[in-house]
Every structure is written in C-alpha cells, then in structure tokens.
Length: 121
Image 1 (cartoon, rainbow, N blue to C red):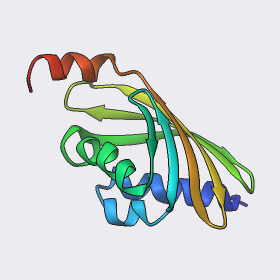
Image 2 (image 1 turned 90 degrees about the vertical axis):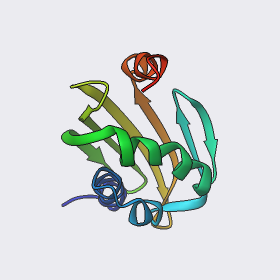
Image 3 (image 1 turned 90 degrees about the horizontal axis):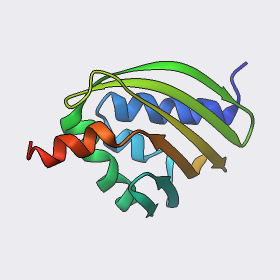
Image 4 (image 1 turned 60 degrees about the vertical axis):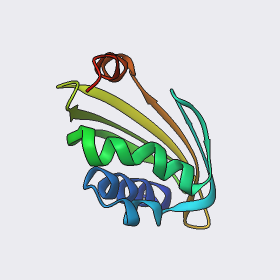
C-alpha cells in the first residue's frame, strides 16, 4: 500500500513532469516552502515561477528511480533528460499536511543548467 504522502508526491511529480503545472500546483499548500539550489522559495506562485521554466522549456523526460514515504513524508529520486543535460538526477523530500505539500527539499546538480545559461540559450 502506498502512503498518503507518497501518493501526493508522486501525483505532483507526474503532473509537473507531464507539463501540467495547474494540476501540479493543486497539490501544494498556498504557503508552501521549497528549499532548492536556487534558494528558498516561499508560496505557491513563487514555486510555480521556479518550476515553470524547467517543466515547460527544459525538461524532455523524467524517469522515476525510487520512491518511499509514510503518512507525512515522501522521498522521490528521479533522473531527467533536459535540453542542457542528457542526465540530470534529482531528489525531492516532501512534507505533507492535510493532503497538501507544505515543504519540499529539492536537490539537483545545477552545473549543467548554469553552463547552459552562460551560453545564452
């Protein structure tokens, strides 16, 4: 049986990697906090602004590697193929309360993305 937090995390992941940002945002609390290599992101609109360029313009595909969770925490690891990198692994650790993601620790290697941005693409 898949835990409730993991179900929500996987649904959010499937939505944003499927480029459905409206659905992806529906899994987030309005005051969600995301800690990412780019810094601390607060609120659902800021989260969308952070995720939209990746989902809409950079992401080619995502492959789930592993997923674990309990009633309040979920951890997923996946590999993405992106415009700047054939392999860009990432992991996200979610905290879920009352059916919504309230916190996300998003970890990925920024190196290929920074190099791509410096090339002006």
